[in-house]
Image 1 (spheres, rainbow, N blue to C red):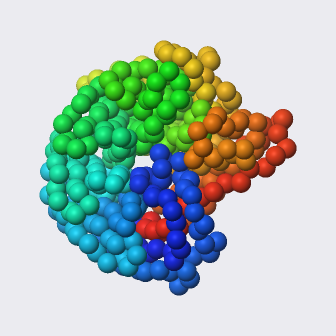
Image 2: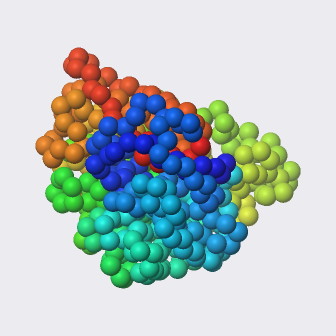
Image 3: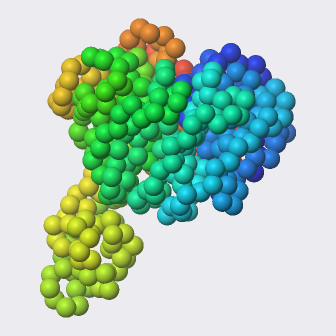
Length: 414
């Protein structure tokens, strides 16, 4: 599905919307959005943007959006007051990435501050432009190996750009000098055979400010300064497509299971197609799920799926959906201490949690008693025009919280 129209609601708002899901990926911003808006209601302006699935970002009087046209990977700036295109820059694709049909060459969302806008394309790499459209720097990258196609969005904090790429091999997290593109540090991450499609967040509480990353079975916090692994929590499903939400000194995660147990049969069932009787499945013998993702399951690349490989895949793919609240204190493995509460039941596959508290908001610095209030998480999918709600209700609370949301400044996805 390609975006057809970009329109802005006719309403004033004091806050910028500088990144994927807004300030620090929270999905929340200050302002008074219209209750109703659409193609013919409360419209300030309307334009036809380039193809793509990224979200718009807004800083000051500029709205930035990425897209693509043929071999060109585009970054476009619009005037927020009029919708007039200010400038358009293009990068040429360096490679072609295999991706899911719902993914896109311009899926990652740009990130911006008062000086620059930084973009990431999985078929090129990183690039930065000034608000005047001048190219500041580029970091070309080789092709990625991802089951569904890399779609993570970069994060900009102070004077550094952070990028996480979890893929079948050579996964990494890196920090780049936002001013000149110099790589400050780059660390290897555990490879994710089925990929991870989450974007990171900044978490400023705890022993030191960190980059919080949902990975393959684990949430990991990296030092912003050095890239060292500061603390981590196990217990997540794999192939996460959601991003975490920060609320005060808590981090809320909601990750769906990659597959139902009934969809991934035991190895004995898979062996029913073992024509040569060697107790393994060669590619020509494979059918169904085994044929569709043979390379993902065949971890050693010997063109044969053995029982150990299938069992490991099945165990990871069927880990239960998990929603949890983390309140980390300390360093190292915090699995036994940081999980404040956890619910294991199905959640939507793509939407990320949006969390607000009656007693504090993401704009305040005081700790928010989220676990003592009703949490209302607005879960908005990026591929269909539909909203879903998940309400988490701790027993000791009777106070309802209100949930702010912002997808009204500029809507591009539907």
